[in-house]
Image (cartoon, rainbow, N blue to C red; front, top):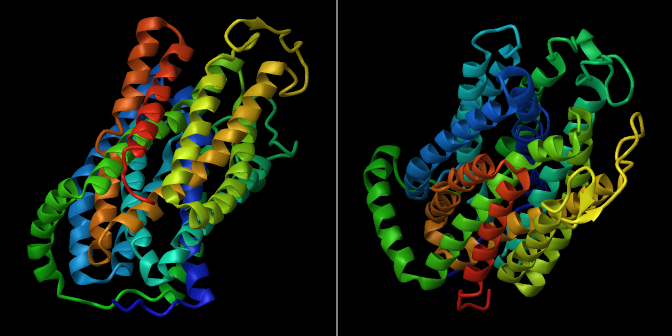
Length: 453
């Protein structure tokens, strides 16, 4: 089968900018700024906030699990991907903007935040499926790993820059009214009503609108195959065939199962890392945001290096190595609290009024977080290049839908188990230890893929 001519550098760069455009949502809203604000300022207790945030994540995950494979099958039948990205961009932007209206004084803030977050998550995940499925049409098969890594690296850079901007110029400590740079928030944002935290929604929407535009202008789409109506009729039936075929394709089936498990663990790690740092180390939102900057920086280098390793050693080896790093790092993190490292070694707590990150447990937490960031990018980037390696090219969107299904169908499970074990034991460390089991089982299943990938 003839391969399509490689796309131009402008087309490839424009494709990679999609990750750049969407990453602030995950960095600012899902992880390091809005989510801690929701749990600490809107919900009655952090535990209630964590529970509600988990419900929103689970609801969007369930919708993705049900619809993503069907949409992928329809997209494969039509051929076009960009119209789908455009369609899902609209609710994503609207939902992000709605987060501005979640002030502590608004009695509807919790409902607005939960619904908007769920809708935005659903929309950006769907758009990502179709963006991912464009990769085989842009570069030769031996360059897919590098392209995937470059996309993740671009996303990390975008997330890093957006996080620095928000922490440095928008988000302020309620106690001092000053940002991380020690200045008053720009545009007169009120620290008392947490306008800087709420501004992450409109900021993410504007950032996305600006940087997704080159994808539509300069990246070529796949040629049209059939009309939408016919694709809607044939797509779901093709999906059922793909599910049966995936079951018959042992490497693909085992990979999708492994991806389901280790992605569940990563969802929980991303959801609870900031909350865990706040509870175990007493970190403020500014410190959690600074931790996010470090994780993002290491993620950039990890994604770039991982892309090269992917092309050299294969995506399976990269994913497996990343999971080993995550296992060791998570084990180290759950061994830390304000006065202890490695579970039982006592340390001197940081004196009152001391500089941030001045204690040994805090420094160890930072170092381990850096390793997690370095491993997360290669794990996710090489997962999608491994899917491309294993999937039939004519059904690539469909199998990316299955990849999204495997990554979301049980995405509520790890967070739920973390919450239940934490509740039963009264220990955050015990709850977080559940994540280790997901990474270990996922790594084991990867070894069962009888494939040179």
